Image 1: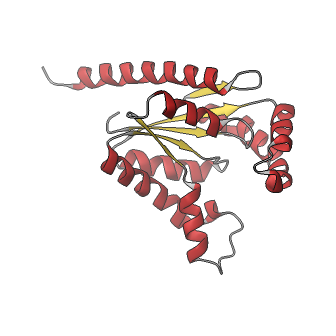
Image 2: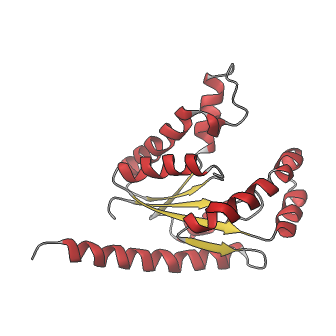
Length: 194
């Protein structure tokens, strides 16, 4: 492990990823910066209006660009990144993770989970994104299938937010980051020649 720490919050719509990321950044804004790869997708959608892809994640250029944009952000800021994006395709996740670690960064994959009923309730009650509620609700079964087949196993940490506030979840995440950082430091010093 080396480079700058990237913490990727994955999980379903309605799990609380963005709220948790905002809590983490607010608690230590000099150290953490929020990165939303969806904006890379918006840019690509505008450049490829004639594409057949229904989801920008299906564009190979999105999966190549996300690590590069993240790398550039940390090169400019020196801050660690908390990245918020649902990625349910295992091949896509592997491609992105390989891109990030290949650029020399340390990546921790955190699954933000909640019960299906909680996810459906939160999505239905989200007034800001109400127009996208039906689309998001249709994806809950896809999330559950991915979680059960590979996502939970691929995560360094799973946080169940069914009955947990974003602040408490961010505190749990912060504790885990402290453990990871101590372990990475210990491993680095063990690798140093005496």
